[in-house]
Length: 117
Image (cartoon, rainbow, N blue to C red; front, top):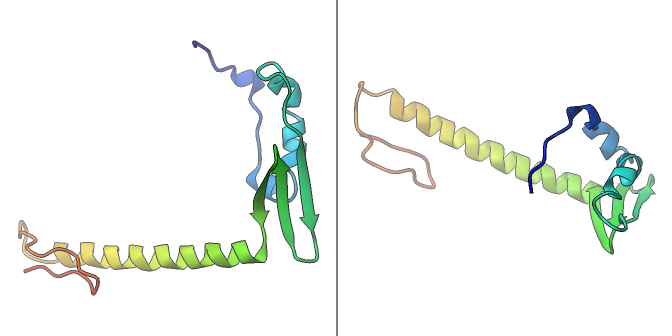
């Protein structure tokens, strides 16, 4: 199927607006155009609980968790894990390049860190 992008019809979506209970509104702005490609666009519902706080979007029988304290804690865990791993790898990269120019790396990265000779 050949198609050409029409940048004059592009929609600009702001991630912060979407995350702050703006997904349904953004989706509603696209429904007319979606109707040209699907016979019946799905309905979107938002469930916002300001006490929890949490934000869930429901569509086509599925729930999409956009925000909750549990999700925030999980994201924080993965961010700290990713950061610690990146720091370890950056440390290894630095160690390997402090040696004499052209020195070969003879050992691989271990769980305890890197080493080269």
